Image 1 (cartoon, helix red, strand yellow):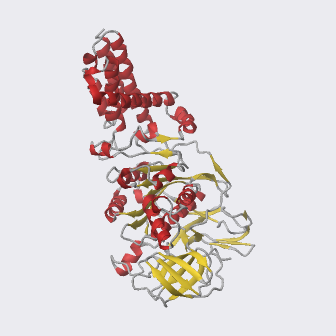
Image 2 (tube, helix red, strand yellow):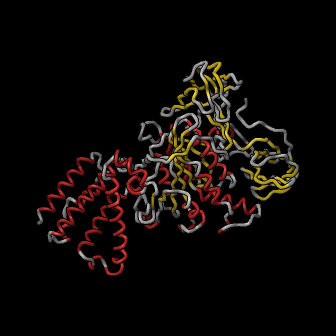
Image 3 (tube, one colour):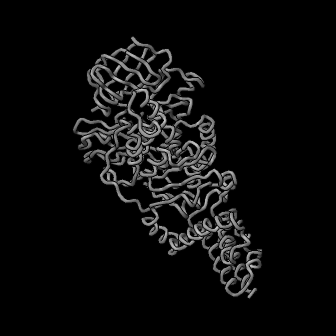
Length: 585
């Protein structure tokens, strides 16, 4: 049985009109979402609208030189991706063409109309079966393993659209991804290669409530605004506020098994930085190369606009495939605003009724359908896996009231708002603690209480309350100055300053401070809280606030982040703070 959708007898057509990436063909016997090849050069496109004899196609390549009268070839199949060993370490464009393979074939500048399989169909992999003849298999069952990279074991599965049956033959050894490795009494043959339509969600048994955090190593995120494994998050921010850097940090440090990084319409130099840096980076969890668990999808701003839509679906489909193996996948989309701009352009070419700010009326539905494919799932083979989706949003001028940001806010449950003022003050990560939030706190608190500290929620709430109070006091300070405040409020500002400088800031260039474990994050919050309690005790005992804030132990809080043996260092600071303050009364 073929894994791909059966090809139906269809009629080829002829181009009737061309408007940018939108081509209208006549005489084309196609279905919605069928892949077609447009023009004499065979440019890849996808059917997006059918009205009578007129078929509208969005083309994923530059359409200059395409003219009416040229042929349109219909494949009869939906846009699909090749799934199998060999996707990790790969760099794809929006329709899963391997860019390194095409570069070897034709150089840095790609010709139009070229294509290549998403995985090498000839490369052989060492297959070790985990089943035997006579075993009963169902769709999704794991039949064996392949060492795909140094850190990831590829689990070969029965495709979800198979009927299953009894194993009549199983092979072991080196095979290409198209070689049959398992034969079933139903006549079906299992290979290491699958195809799956990108717009169709891979089946699962149940979507569960996530209760485990995706540890990012960033204190402001793990400590104040955590994301669950299987959760959704948005990172909106103006130009230069650090969206890409934040996502790259997540891709490096998040405790996910697999990372899918989608560059959706971003500038070429940003994707170049990712492509240059990732192969040289070391995975802090395994010590292996970071690329050994990473798949990059590069669709830059100078590539065809329509391909921005395909790249997000390609990425989420690859993520679902690894989720089905039982892995935790982190998917980074940078940025969904560029995808929305592509939808707006296609919509305007179709002369559809525009919604707010010219975006199509179905913007919210498309964003929702994408984020809904994330989650913590029970798979059809009995394993559990997750997809955590993090989408960067690039609102023009940093205006969070624009449609893409607002529609994303209604969907995701974690909001990491970036602030250009913090970035200008060199405060990184530039996540605004007054605007950001996480709706996962309550369901993740039991994990933090069990694995980090029993009073994690209370300590975190103290940090949030202190920062909220500082925000209110800063408005007064802008009017009358800090010296006009009562002593207790001046002391609150001093404590909040250590929270901002010592706890919320992290130096990505310092190997010790770039990643902070949950244990270190908690101890830093606790150390600053200890200083606060001792300082307010001294103030109540009559010690002047100037003497309290001038002790030499407190400034050492700023060095905790860059200290490797932080446990002993924090204990020393807490002891010195107590001694120096208590001797004053």
